[in-house]
Length: 388
View 1 (tube, helix red, strand yellow):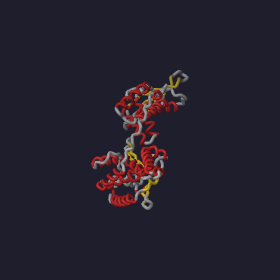
View 2: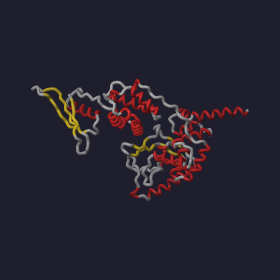
View 3: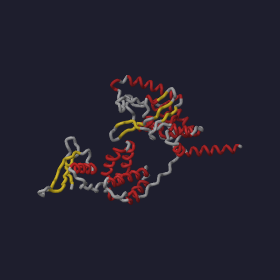
View 4: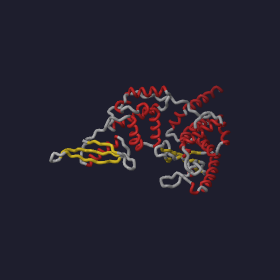
């Protein structure tokens, strides 16, 4: 039989427990008992269970005599789930998304409930309230709950997943893609000369090349091929909220792609980079770049004055400010990517070319995303017969 008691943290503030394991009697009838003090990374049920299992194994015990407590609240379990599963097995982008979903109602609603007592009826009530509050990401939150309860079963806290009999929210039909028309694009282009050169170039890359925000943020000097007028898109810039660090990740599909760039934009990028190189050379000890895996500096095209990367979200905020200040139609920065695709479709560009420029995994994704534009083009095409 195994048990434990929580000890005061060590000098470094790390949690400690004392383990007690009884494993029979000796020849004189004396009870055999062993004790051990263990320092843990974090005081969680899972870590305690693992420590006891390892201690029992070291004593030659074949079976685990310690039963995990099922009196764990949803809030405590969510912390364990994020630390022991999401933090170790999933990408940072997923971890950031899960943290947001938990903060957007899940912990507030289920937090003090014991995991084993959460019912499908409670889950249905939660999503009913979420719908009334017009909250977003309902399908994603349900999927997260389902994954969490499956892990709870795997880890011994639960026997049946309450999501199995709950009503899964229906995904809302996608709203019409928000994008600029050709006339609105002309309006935007008339505004660009008034902007800071960095913001101007970021907007032109999104609008003329269809790059995602994190892809633009990850562009480096060597990403550009001026001879062939192309950009190599092989990374995204991500920020880990837990470790508070920036790092380069793969693209959304995990595949790199070559994007073709208009000559005018390419010339502007060339001049901008040459000026930036001169400024960085003058920094000396003030140069503070992000380092790669070989501790070599990464030269981002768009960065702070000291070479350190800007947060990708800052690009989006700056764009919103530009929209308000210059009274532009309310389109998101990602909407410029849609504007690129919409404009190209309207000009009769082959859908396969658009797919490759955007970096969609397959042409079906492109067709589904811009089906409304394709429909408009078909309607206009059929109108030609009226002129016969």
